[in-house]
Image (cartoon, rainbow, N blue to C red; front, side, top):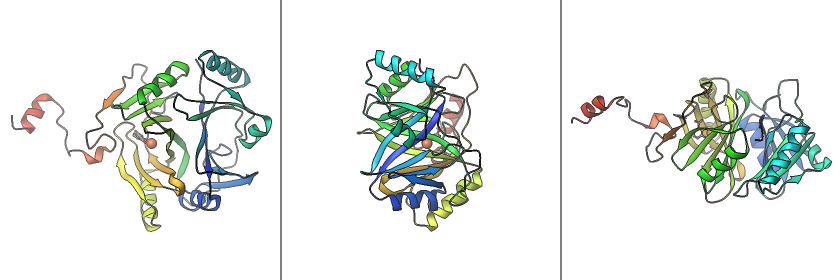
Length: 294
Ligand SMILES: O=C(O)c1cccc(O)c1O
Ligand SMILES: [Fe+2]
């Protein structure tokens, strides 16, 4: 089993770097750490970057996950190869472009490019944020895949990944540490990046950001709302070239060794946002009957 240590970055192509980078700094609030050889590095926490824009065609290029060390990377290569997954080792130049010591790349069963990295550069000084959005860290990444169950099978058989919750066949929220999820897969017709999440410091930050986004005329995709799964309060918004960002606050941790994944019904209005549901959910059959006047 391959042990993922953390999420590392999302690497995305952009046909208009000035607009994509400008949005990430001026609207999302990230720090532009610099750019080199057509790659712009955006910082949100101690990672050198968690979002890299690479000049070229718009669209996600890769999602990076960090492993412990070189031995773990070599072992991962062997395990992936043994599982019939085609693995490509990164070159030193490509590793430098990612500010990692070494990495390998492969595609998930749907064509989402995944990179396993070691030695991602970490910076001691706090980020110089583009604006005070209250960002505390790169929280999670969400991929698209046509078959969420198959995606779960892939990740849970090869990696230290557990499912925290399902939203029917629509989504699978997965963890490899106590955070409720750092990897999610949502059903989509094509592989791709569903969204990138940033945790913020308070509920007030979510709401202040929502106001700021509205005043800037940024398209709010959903929220403010509250996810019944992680109980995080969230707002999703659209960036250039279809990149969806999410701020959220209060993601729960799962410390229980006997956690049983729940299955939320995607046809329910409150499946993703519990503030869209009834004000009071009857908690027992008797209450349900009374509520229904049975
Ligand atoms: O945080 C969550 O629970 C969550 C649930 C559904 C979809 C998401 O993007 C989430 O972050
Ligand atoms: Fe999310």
